[in-house]
Image 1 (cartoon, rainbow, N blue to C red):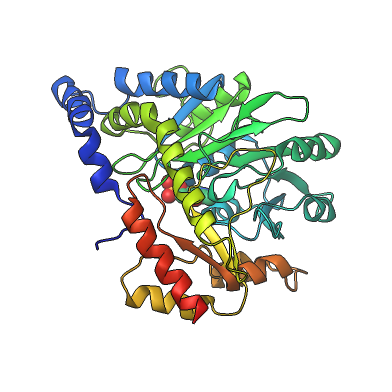
Image 2: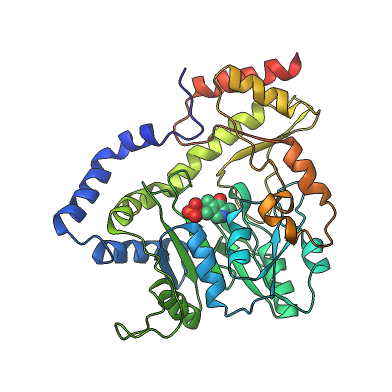
Length: 376
Ligand SMILES: *Cc1c(COP(=O)(O)O)cnc(C)c1O
């Protein structure tokens, strides 16, 4: 049986006609940068997310960098982020000569911990970057009130949770990524809303920030061409990627359903296995399962991984090393000796194949091998 961590080939075959037509329209128009197709995608995504401004860009890492540039921070300003995340979140902070303050996460949903945020706020703290890891939102309502209390910006790294709903205590519902000052996402092919190359976007409800973001993403150029008001970057979503995203956005909710049914299947198969902690589903958001990441608590994560590799079952460790233990980020370790939850998760997490094209036969094969090995 041929298994994949993510199966974009089979998914494409099912929407081939729509995708090919959409790409062909771009080829026929020969408008490859900007233009009506990119604009249509921007509008569709604004409607889907119910957010005032979507600004497409070249990738998710750029989105994070542009977001931080738009906040006009000064070198040496501190930005709080979870230590258990993909490197991109810390990278852009360090690149801008800001100081990443890496804090611990919750043992249940793996998202940034509120007490740890509070503990690490100091006179130089200017922003918090919560990461909605593996497909469910951080505690945004509480994070926004901490930010208000200390006058901090909030930039959501929503690369893994696009489409997830956030439930406020008063019953209001808002899409993840649209709650902070700025939200960022990635359209990397394997993300929940992925294109067939690189892509990303920023979201904001703030008109002034939206203008700033648009300007920074376009070489710092304001409304008059060849006049540059700030130092910017070149970061664009191209029209062919937008054409693909226009099709895939229509399928995003059904894809989320397919992912959730895979998660439900895995969950029920592992119910009796005391050494497997299946993904916790927090109360304040719905999980769109970018990853199905379980914890193997009996110390056998690495041998299980080796076994799955040997029988051809794809699997991955997201993430094997706390950010502050990465060579490039060692100098930012500061007073942090060890973040207990982050350290534990790096030793225990294992992600199984998660995508829209898994059949019952495939899932049976996967869970039987996992259970058989751990029971032996
Ligand atoms: C994928 C990802 C990014 C970066 O997106 P790219 O499009 O690959 O630059 C940033 N943060 C998180 C959490 C991600 O998963």
